Length: 135
Image (cartoon, rainbow, N blue to C red):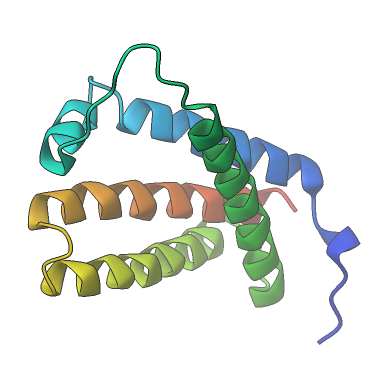
Protein backbone atom coordinates (compact mmCIF):
# COMPACT_ATOMS: atom_id res chain seq x y z
CA UNK A 1 0.00 0.00 0.00
CA UNK A 2 1.53 3.26 -1.15
CA UNK A 3 0.03 6.28 0.57
CA UNK A 4 1.29 9.82 0.85
CA UNK A 5 -0.30 12.47 3.07
CA UNK A 6 -0.10 14.95 0.20
CA UNK A 7 -2.76 12.86 -1.60
CA UNK A 8 -5.42 14.13 0.81
CA UNK A 9 -7.74 17.04 0.14
CA UNK A 10 -6.78 19.41 2.95
CA UNK A 11 -9.57 21.84 2.15
CA UNK A 12 -12.00 18.97 2.79
CA UNK A 13 -10.14 18.22 6.04
CA UNK A 14 -10.52 21.85 7.13
CA UNK A 15 -14.20 21.98 6.15
CA UNK A 16 -14.77 18.68 7.96
CA UNK A 17 -13.19 20.06 11.12
CA UNK A 18 -15.37 23.17 10.93
CA UNK A 19 -18.48 21.04 10.38
CA UNK A 20 -17.49 18.89 13.37
CA UNK A 21 -17.20 21.97 15.61
CA UNK A 22 -20.42 23.50 14.29
CA UNK A 23 -22.34 20.27 14.72
CA UNK A 24 -21.05 19.88 18.27
CA UNK A 25 -22.08 23.44 19.10
CA UNK A 26 -25.63 22.72 17.92
CA UNK A 27 -25.85 19.18 19.34
CA UNK A 28 -24.70 20.26 22.79
CA UNK A 29 -26.64 23.53 22.80
CA UNK A 30 -29.68 24.06 25.03
CA UNK A 31 -31.83 23.56 21.92
CA UNK A 32 -30.89 19.88 21.72
CA UNK A 33 -28.96 17.94 24.38
CA UNK A 34 -26.80 20.54 26.14
CA UNK A 35 -28.93 21.09 29.22
CA UNK A 36 -29.56 17.38 29.70
CA UNK A 37 -25.86 16.58 29.25
CA UNK A 38 -24.88 19.23 31.82
CA UNK A 39 -27.49 17.93 34.26
CA UNK A 40 -26.53 14.26 33.85
CA UNK A 41 -22.81 14.97 34.20
CA UNK A 42 -23.30 17.41 37.08
CA UNK A 43 -21.21 20.01 35.26
CA UNK A 44 -21.15 23.54 36.65
CA UNK A 45 -20.29 26.47 34.43
CA UNK A 46 -19.25 29.53 36.37
CA UNK A 47 -19.36 32.94 34.76
CA UNK A 48 -15.90 34.29 34.23
CA UNK A 49 -14.40 30.83 33.84
CA UNK A 50 -11.95 30.70 30.97
CA UNK A 51 -12.64 27.63 28.82
CA UNK A 52 -10.18 28.62 26.10
CA UNK A 53 -8.09 25.45 26.46
CA UNK A 54 -11.21 23.29 26.22
CA UNK A 55 -12.27 24.97 22.99
CA UNK A 56 -8.77 24.87 21.50
CA UNK A 57 -8.55 21.18 22.42
CA UNK A 58 -11.97 20.55 20.87
CA UNK A 59 -10.92 22.30 17.67
CA UNK A 60 -7.78 20.17 17.50
CA UNK A 61 -9.81 16.99 18.07
CA UNK A 62 -12.23 18.06 15.32
CA UNK A 63 -9.44 18.72 12.82
CA UNK A 64 -7.59 15.52 13.71
CA UNK A 65 -10.83 13.50 13.44
CA UNK A 66 -11.47 14.97 10.00
CA UNK A 67 -7.89 14.23 8.94
CA UNK A 68 -8.04 10.63 10.16
CA UNK A 69 -11.41 10.13 8.46
CA UNK A 70 -9.88 11.42 5.22
CA UNK A 71 -7.04 8.91 5.61
CA UNK A 72 -9.39 5.98 6.28
CA UNK A 73 -11.70 6.95 3.41
CA UNK A 74 -8.69 7.21 1.11
CA UNK A 75 -7.19 3.89 2.24
CA UNK A 76 -10.51 2.05 1.87
CA UNK A 77 -11.12 3.50 -1.58
CA UNK A 78 -14.48 4.97 -0.56
CA UNK A 79 -15.44 7.33 -3.35
CA UNK A 80 -19.02 8.40 -2.98
CA UNK A 81 -21.94 8.97 -0.64
CA UNK A 82 -22.73 5.35 0.14
CA UNK A 83 -19.17 4.15 0.64
CA UNK A 84 -18.26 7.27 2.64
CA UNK A 85 -21.39 6.82 4.76
CA UNK A 86 -20.45 3.19 5.40
CA UNK A 87 -16.90 4.05 6.50
CA UNK A 88 -18.12 6.90 8.71
CA UNK A 89 -20.86 4.82 10.31
CA UNK A 90 -18.44 1.96 11.01
CA UNK A 91 -16.00 4.33 12.70
CA UNK A 92 -18.88 5.84 14.70
CA UNK A 93 -19.91 2.36 15.81
CA UNK A 94 -16.33 1.54 16.75
CA UNK A 95 -16.12 4.66 18.94
CA UNK A 96 -19.52 3.82 20.44
CA UNK A 97 -18.23 0.45 21.62
CA UNK A 98 -15.67 2.19 23.84
CA UNK A 99 -18.46 4.23 25.38
CA UNK A 100 -20.56 1.08 25.81
CA UNK A 101 -17.78 -0.62 27.77
CA UNK A 102 -17.57 2.39 30.09
CA UNK A 103 -21.34 2.32 30.52
CA UNK A 104 -21.37 -1.40 31.31
CA UNK A 105 -18.85 -0.84 34.10
CA UNK A 106 -20.79 2.08 35.54
CA UNK A 107 -18.35 4.81 34.50
CA UNK A 108 -21.24 6.67 32.90
CA UNK A 109 -24.98 6.19 32.77
CA UNK A 110 -27.17 5.07 29.87
CA UNK A 111 -28.59 8.51 29.15
CA UNK A 112 -25.11 10.04 28.84
CA UNK A 113 -24.11 7.05 26.70
CA UNK A 114 -26.93 7.62 24.21
CA UNK A 115 -26.26 11.36 24.00
CA UNK A 116 -22.54 10.74 23.42
CA UNK A 117 -22.91 8.01 20.82
CA UNK A 118 -25.58 9.98 18.97
CA UNK A 119 -23.05 12.78 18.55
CA UNK A 120 -20.32 10.42 17.34
CA UNK A 121 -22.49 8.32 15.04
CA UNK A 122 -23.85 11.40 13.30
CA UNK A 123 -20.64 13.40 12.94
CA UNK A 124 -18.47 10.49 11.83
CA UNK A 125 -21.11 9.51 9.27
CA UNK A 126 -21.21 13.09 8.00
CA UNK A 127 -17.39 13.20 7.82
CA UNK A 128 -17.35 9.89 5.96
CA UNK A 129 -19.81 11.22 3.39
CA UNK A 130 -17.87 14.49 3.05
CA UNK A 131 -14.55 12.76 2.47
CA UNK A 132 -16.13 10.10 0.25
CA UNK A 133 -17.47 12.82 -2.04
CA UNK A 134 -14.65 15.36 -1.84
CA UNK A 135 -11.27 13.77 -2.38
